[in-house]
Amino acid sequence: MVALEPDEPISPRMLKRVIQQVKDAGCPPLFSEPQYENTALRTIAQETGAAVYELDPLVTGDGALTAYEDTMHKNLAVLQEALSN
Image 1 (cartoon, rainbow, N blue to C red):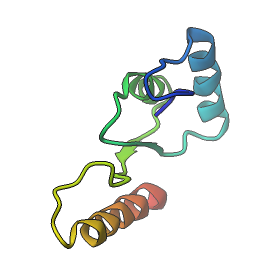
Image 2 (image 1 turned 180 degrees about the vertical axis):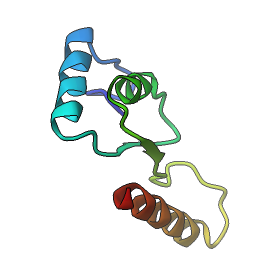
Image 3 (image 1 turned 135 degrees about the horizontal axis):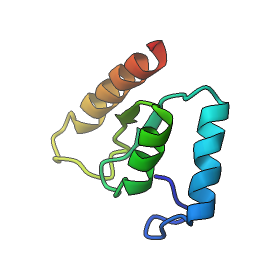
Image 4 (image 1 turned 90 degrees about the horizontal axis):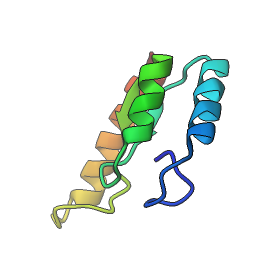
């Protein structure tokens, strides 16, 4: 999430600064979490061309006995994909 606090959107000035930082860093992959709104992140991705990937920190879950392990395997696959591009 691109914010100082989960429910607090970033200012246009900060958004502009983050966009420039992403460009300066060579447009590395960006990561989101499923439980948060990602309007600012989508704007950053659109302005920079950086790809966005979702990682689940297990705040949400289905309660299955294998939920943690399954989610970590999925997150690992997402990280491998994101970092191999």
